[in-house]
Structures are given as structure tokens and as C-alpha cells.
Length: 307
Image 1 (cartoon, helix red, strand yellow):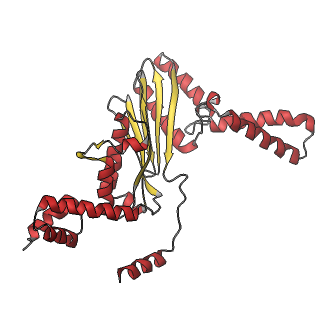
Image 2 (cartoon, one colour; image 1 turned 60 degrees about the vertical axis):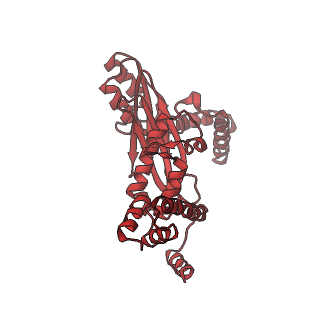
């Protein structure tokens, strides 16, 4: 006879449904460890079935060390916005952001094979598989990045409950509270203005040539004389670069400043050159083709499967 207490304990350990726990204990003749293993095996099968479903919701999580010298950012996806606010899901994402800041790996495939920071008996991949079985949705760790800085500070900014996440790195020989405020302001700038590059030197030249050709065709279509088209193209490219390069953008908090001017003024305040040397911006689900389904049809389909 399997006791209600044993079922409750197994459910707490695995997060599996009550009837699944009872069946597992019955099959293993009450052996708790074997029942856990059996549910994991079943969880693996369940996770595999869910793996084909599109996971375009989720959360961006960031972690910055206390000394502001190390940071990580990660995107973890799920299928619905309901699961994106699940406490277990959010804790998993936050732990992964910390792991991202500490790892020496650069590929996502290697990160998920590391021991999970909150339970080193499992890899990240194994823990995720159990979480998929527990919550009942496909999930995946999509991407991550990490920053380190010796002289300076790193800041993070999360917008829209994890819809957008940003890390910025500001270097300065005299790191101070001012440096931290600037780094935070820049993180908000990146979230709002979505620059594609740090400065003109980092812009892909092929992209610039494509823009030049586009502007040339536009100018000719507008009926502009051939002899002034080149000047117009140069002007439009300069304007384009100011829009896509962080240091050339107008500061969203004060339209009288560019980011370069802001950094110059703050450098004078601290008595040392302050410069932004890197940033990363993740937006949840960008580039993922999300399958649109009729909710009523989806419910009907599931009911039909359950018969």
C-alpha cells in the first residue's frame, strides 16, 4: 500500500503530477529513489515530445557581480507568457545568467553541459529536462554573453519584465559612482534606441555599401541631378551612422547631448577618460518565427487527444 505521505514527498522532489507519483511508487514497490529515477525517465520522454514546439516567449535575465567587474546575460525561451512568469522558470534563468558570467565556455552547447549552479548533481541540460516535464512546456536556453572589466564598471538594465535585457561596459581608470551612473544610463539608452554598433569603426563595410546604393537609388528616384547625388548619399550615410552607432546617438535623457558629449563631460568630472567599450542587447524571441494558433482549436485538439 502506497501512503499519501510517500506520494506527497515524491511530488515535492520531482514536481510530477500526483497520479504519476503514485504509479511510479507502485511500479517500484515504494522505493523512493527508484521512483524518482523512473519519473525522470518518463520526463525525458515527455520533454522529447515537447521539443518540437515553438518556444518564442520567455525572459532575458542578467547578472552583475557585486564589484561590477563581471556580468552575464542569457535568453531562456518557453512557449507561453504564462510560463515566462513562473517562479521556477525565472529562478532558472537568473541562475543561468550567473553561470554565464562565470563560464569559460563561449558556446551555448557547452554551457548547458556544465553542472547546474543550484544543483550540481545535474547538468543544466538535465535540470532543464526535468523543468520541462514539471511545467509541461518546451523550453530552451537560446543564447548568452559575458563581460569582464578591469578598470571600470559593468551595468545591466532589464525592460518590460525581461522582454529586453542589456549589458554595458564602461572603462575608466578612476571608477566611481559617476561611472556606474553613466554605465546604467547607457544601458537604458541601448534598450531604448537599439544601436547596432558601438561606433563607426565597428560597422560592417558591406552594410555601409548596401546603404549607399540604397540611398543613391532613392535620390535618383526623387529626380535629383546626377551631379549632386553623391553629396546627398554622403549626407544620408552620415545620418544613418548616427542612428545606428551608440556613441553618435542623441542621448534619450537629454536631446542636447550625444553619447560622445555625455562621456566627455563625465570624463572631466571624474578626472579620467571614460569610454564605453562594449554592449550587448537581447530582445526576447527576436528572429524566432512564432507559429500562430487558434486557441479554441488548440484546446479542442488537446481534448480530442485525451479521449
